[in-house]
Amino acid sequence: MDSEFLTDTSQQHSGIHTLEPKKWVELHADYLYNFAIVRLNDEEQARDLVQETFLSALEKTAGFRGESAERTWLTAILKYKIIDIYRKKAGSFAVNDKTGAPDNEPEFFDPDLNHWKKEHWPAPFGVEDKDPLHNKEFMGVLERCMSRLPSLWMSVFKLKHMDEENTEFICKELKLSSSNFWVIIHRAKVNLRSCLQKNWI
Amino acid sequence: MKKILKTDEERIAYNCRKATLLIEKKQDIELTAREKMELTLHLAGCYICRVYEEQSVLINSMMRKIFKGPKDPLKLDDEFKEQLKKKIKDKTGTN
Image 1 (cartoon, rainbow over the protein chains, first blue to last red):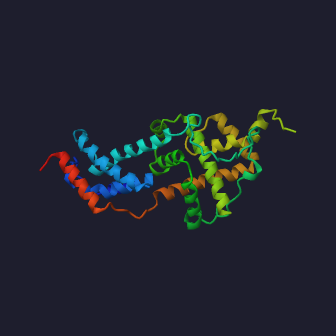
Image 2: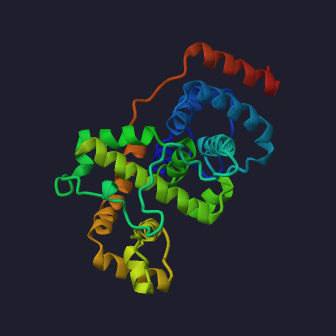
Image 3: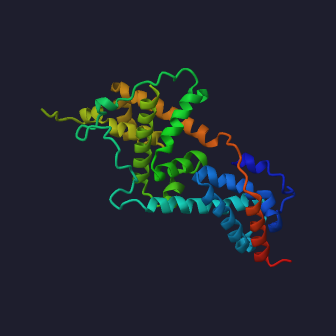
């Protein structure tokens, strides 16, 4: 995201930044809209959030100290609104499973001995030495597998890999204990890996 | 007949569930000395978890690429933008 802020030429980089709410829609609405869409995959919700961001920003103008560009400041407000939505989604899981696992999650490991069940053994994908990151088909399979992940797991991955947030921040914002966080990462990865193997090989 | 794991070494050697959890942790934070020892010991004898580790690292890079890759930018429609401008104007109370 940082590089995108740098290309924001709407501000003069003379030190102190100022706010010009009259120009917000022209300058930042589409940017904020796209920022929200990639994180929520919901155009309707993204529209609402752009509006909410502008309106709550107007109430906070007194707190704007001109240390960051207008867009950076607005984006930070939007980001907290997105995390609020992540948190609300997380809160809708049953109390007995705080990790938000899907009901149909297979047992990958033997319940007593904890080794891989034979039918779930990881096998090489066969693309490892051929630059898989540039293999569009392979990336496409992973993308489809990701779209099936429960929303809490996806929120964790987005905070971690899209926003590069650290573990402590994610746990605090999503109200997860650190052990639940690791259980989520682990189970999500085991599921994702398995889905990739099943649909690729 | 059910297998019973008697020694610590045996428990570590069998515990792919824990080994894969440690593989995930390791990519993010420093493992404790004991965790490092257990993981090394486990991976030395477990080819499947070595495959898992390689793929887990790969999946992380793939996810980062997917999340950060260029997307076709969408635009809000003009009507919505006009409403938004009006709302901002009303709220700022400036003429």
